[in-house]
Image (cartoon, rainbow, N blue to C red; front, side, top):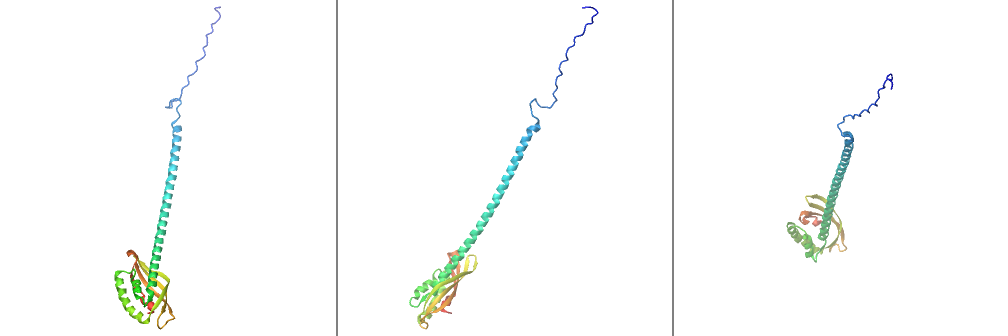
Length: 210
């Protein structure tokens, strides 16, 4: 090689620059915290929404159940009250019919019917009254038959019912052998707390036309 020839320096290609990863505090491949938390937040909100709906449904069912039970109890109470009124009216009407039927030839049977179902105190009063009435019926040869017309509860307080009972009475006597038609009204007081005992009776004389 000639000394005049200048030696050209060999050019070496620069080494590729190293890529510097920005510091993120995460290992390579890890997702950011926000990406990890977003699904959890969505699930939590969904759970809260479902819980709220369930709570509302439970509340609605509770209210409806309470209303149903309240209405059912009201209907049951009204039904029981109607049943008791009917029982009082039936008992009073039965008593009135039996008390109005008299036959001077068999007054003992009438006396039994007159005190049937009455309290001991009323039993004594009616037994005494029956003796006085018998003195009227026998000379007149009194015979009367009766049929029920209607009965209506006039008042009720604490299980004590006052009932007006109406009966149609056909009476035959020596003076009226063909019979006289009349309507007798009985006021009957019944105690539902004591097996529906009859504690007072008014209008027994009505069957006699008094």
